[in-house]
Length: 441
Image 1 (cartoon, rainbow, N blue to C red):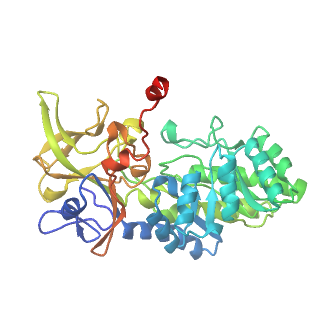
Image 2: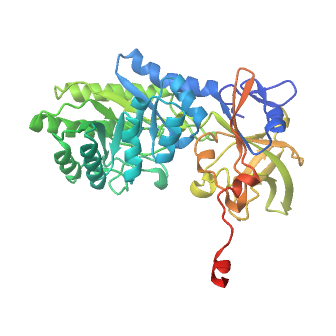
Image 3: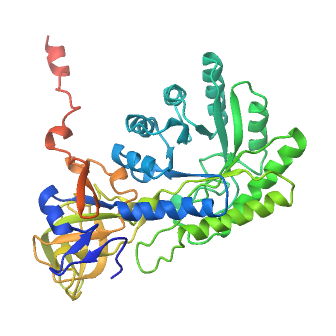
């Protein structure tokens, strides 16, 4: 069994994270429960940031917060000198409430609304990553009406297809995101903003996909972006200040996954950008990247209480937990794979094979199929590893199930980051039925 970050197995046979007994966490906070290992996130963040510093390269490492968003994680990101990538008004609002430095916020999205962009201008954020021509018109209207400047990047699709799931591939030509780099779209966008009084184009951005385990795609994309920048430099004397190469750095979900250390991705990016700019006599731009999953994915562990069991003779044995696709949609959506352990029996041998089913009213609500685990009894605590990215952030109230609590752990201490939803929370926005009464009156 592979342990992540500060995970250990105690003398009592229990799984510990950050020096805290996960069985005790389950008792105190209930299950399902997300547990985040802050020391592991710190380690990953420094792996990116310190590598840029080592090579003397100006950079911003922006936490791609769609992976997991809340006030506490934004405050933690601020403490770790990360910038912030937000993709909606809700994420931006949360960042503002967390007192995150607005100059380090970058706003993404393929369909930002007028009101969302107004919020960005009001907050005086550091950069808006422009995705389409409609957005350019909105930005012109807002900036001119307010006499207010805004830094922008163009998101482009460089025609680089990463080796990943089709649903999380974004850099190829057929994508809902960005201006195409090869068909003239980004040149037309450039013409629409070059010389604008209030919109300052800093440079280009791309994101080629997620769960990427090599550096080739990043190098290829960087070369394509710098080639375009060189063209603009020669024709319009454009000086690129920022090259944003996105994120998508892979993590280890199961033993089949072989991710690279953060410094390897960064070193290859630096090498490529230096080589490509030097041979074109261009100034070295500031490099921005956007790790999300690679910061928080392996740091998150989901705890569940095991309830019912069902044996289908000669086929499989099911164990059911008190959560499921309502707190982790990825297995149903992406066929995502996970590893797990019985947290209160972590030192015992894995002698039985189970399929872990959720409690949602869907046949496809299976978190893990055919995993070898310790012999299970009802009431045991199941710990599923590497659920820190896109677990809570994609959670829902399907079947009217309240969303779980989230706890941070470090150095033997634990802190509630998001409280568990109550049944009262579920009906907070519900309204009484009135139509029939109106008609009768």
